[in-house]
Image (cartoon, rainbow, N blue to C red; front, side, top):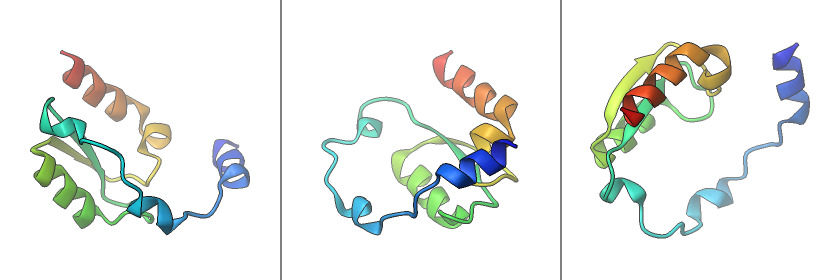
Length: 85
């Protein structure tokens, strides 16, 4: 049911958004945490690892899709709690 609703409301990715400037990256001044989704079909895990390394992130990996926060909410919540602690 949840996956059906997500699928119905999902728009195609627009690669142009990746080229838009976003200002100074927050990870340059605050600690960064990253949850690598190894089964992501949108953003390859190796690209996620590269971004996490570049940001100096504390990394956790999980065998999940692009929407790890839906499929593995406990793992996601645990990472958020570690970041907040």
